[in-house]
Image (cartoon, rainbow, N blue to C red):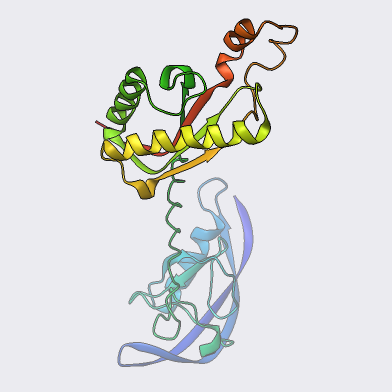
Amino acid sequence: MKEVGVMIETRVFIHKDNSMNKIISTKKYLIGAVVLPGLLSAGAVMADMHGLDGISARQGFSVAEKTEAYSVDDRGVVVRNSTGLCWRTGYWTPAMAIYECDPDLVKQPEQVVEAPPPPPAPAPLPEPEKVSFSADALFDFDKAALKPDGKQALEDFVGKLENVNYDLIIAVGYTDRIGSDEYNKKLSVRRAEAVKSYLVSLGVSPDRVFTDGKGKANPVTGDSCKGVRATRDLIACLAPDRRVEIEVAGTREAH
């Protein structure tokens, strides 16, 4: 057994309409107590001492903010009386009120609402689809009139546009390096215009077809035909440069 000294603080309250209004006086008594080790805790002794003043006190709930405005036990828990009211100290003022004890005097804390997640990023736009037609398949050499095989190739191309939402079709004509720059420029433009005319005849809006001719620019053969001198052999070697490139900018519909 162990003898300890316990300080008991007795408060006298004036009750009005079953609510505590003011602490009138405070008296403290030091009494002796005999404690059996391991049986009674300091908190239990304090609870027994509160019963001496005729008021049955019970524990309240923990508050985040420590304050001198309310009586708390050794665990930091606000002490309440038998009617559920928090014990106020003599330092209490309305400005020191906490929501858990005096909700009418304190604005209710606002709940933090998490912001909704951002919407997913839009899918990237597909790359423009480019189709290259051999000019030799579309036209006779040094000509700008479409051959039957060339018309069939363009008809197949338009058939593939049925499931495509396109904004623009770009037809660009090219020639090989044989001949003057001026002549090749005009020939490439005529070939691009011939392609446009046939596309329009197949139902493509003329406002959606843009044409251009770049002559001998941007050869796809590179240096592979260097050293070829015979005209017929050179014409055959440079065939890939004689072309019409058709580019479609749009999106393909899902089935």
